[in-house]
Length: 136
Image 1 (cartoon, rainbow, N blue to C red):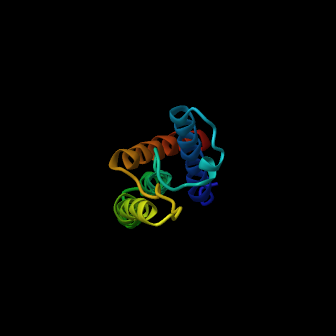
Image 2 (image 1 turned 90 degrees about the vertical axis):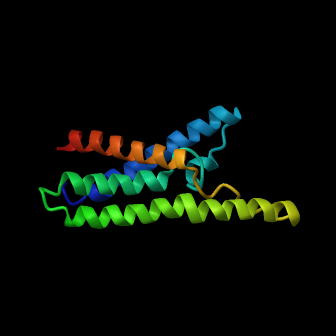
């Protein structure tokens, strides 16, 4: 199970964070849009941040004092989080302006605000710790 937990646990974390995102948007918009469960772009929480924080947490837990692999996953997690909050967020702002000036229908919610990223990180870490403690 040890080798497969690096696939299974992050996969469960992504599904769980997408479900939370779906619920939050259904409550806020007062309507159910099932496509939001399958569309991972934008919104609270960030599934990308949840995923990478899950992998990072697992490598930390299994590091046994050797933090080499944890360091690598931590750096890659920062890159993914930066991309979700920076580059993809800016793409969403550009899409919004393009939609205003040219009858386009570009997806506008593709990046994350810092609070959405923090929410994803918290969900990723807590869910990973819970699942990992159950399967030990």
